Image (tube, rainbow, N blue to C red):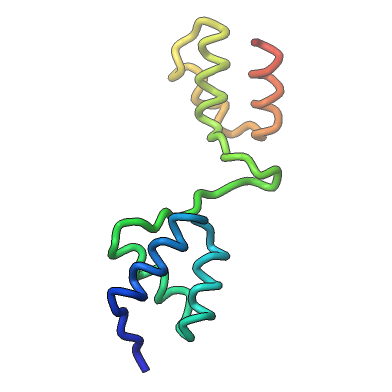
Length: 103
């Protein structure tokens, strides 16, 4: 059975989500309405208020690409980044250590 999102329900989920824009809010609202969380997310997306949660690594930080570290290393060595392309094959932890050491 599909839920009909009345203007009152739409305003309720919009207000609740904007007050606390987390996946848990979507799950709680879905539980209240008796619909799957994806239904609430879809409605929030159609309203233009849903913000996709970005990927975080194990430490809760936004990941940094290897290329960023290679560019930092190249800049520290005053080299063109193209000359350091083969560093793509190096372990990321090694790249991080080299970039930090060169700073």
